[in-house]
Length: 455
Image (cartoon, rainbow, N blue to C red):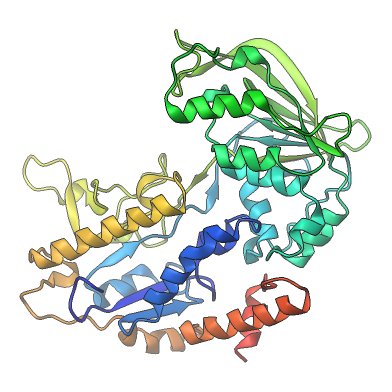
């Protein structure tokens, strides 16, 4: 809006509330990460911006209904599908959850409001994956629940955590410490948890002090070598980082045939001359190991899915990578439109940003930078008189109607659009509920409850 004069931006969101990953994915005890909402709010209150919440594009409104009324469409809808392991027991035993579902549950994501993980059935938890989300889950399980009561974690999650019997958490990865994707900050937070001990890492898995490392791997090695100051013998709970283990099966209890009791792993070995190379790969060995687990969390990544209607509009989607094919700037590319000997060409007016553009990697700050980059290229293309949707360009004076042209159809379908004023009313109601409980807010975790605020 700042680069194109009189530009109007309509943002569609399937839920009544905005902020996506910031609201539903950021750990409740990391409120500072959510400060980017202030910038989002500044943009949303601009005269050229329209928030169109509670409208699920592809389901409530078909994509083909939108395209005639816009000069450009930017897809920035993230990754909603979990990667799975595909091993025996994963889909049949109770007590196995995706980390995404668990995080969504305690953050009030309506999709997982009824997840109800039972954390009282045993003392052993295993988290598969060693990224920051995995450590978020570990920290939540190990934290004193009273520490979490002042955050915006939902009351139903606090209730379940207060009844938790989990005392031992293992965070398991296929590769070694130098290949893990967690950050120093996340590990340090776990080391600093009160009354939580850490099981030391086998020194042979860490590079010797004489090894030449760049700054970040060196700091990580020092931190992991030092471990936690809390004594294991006096700690109420404990955790470990377990490396070089690949899950091969989830196993049922002998007492309850439908309930998780343990996980079997194949030990792996790092390949190559340098086992401390961050890109080193592993191979499976014949050695097996079983670890007890009353509950398990799968945190091995996400994938985006195509929106219904993309294919018929000629918008490609790479289901293997879980992205919309694009050039380095976010222009959506298609082989079917390529002239002559060109392999691919830009679909006029179609762009993407974020995880659906480059895959589910990076943090919120890097995703914001990615969005800025795509916005810059849209502005550049418009200024250079490139072709947009419906043949529009900066020079031909065609005007797209946007949401104003779609409102009547949405109303005819019985859709209830939530605008920014509606979100502010929901926001205020959540904060008022939170004050009564001594916290910043108490989120509504169902769409029905959100809409009831608006009457």
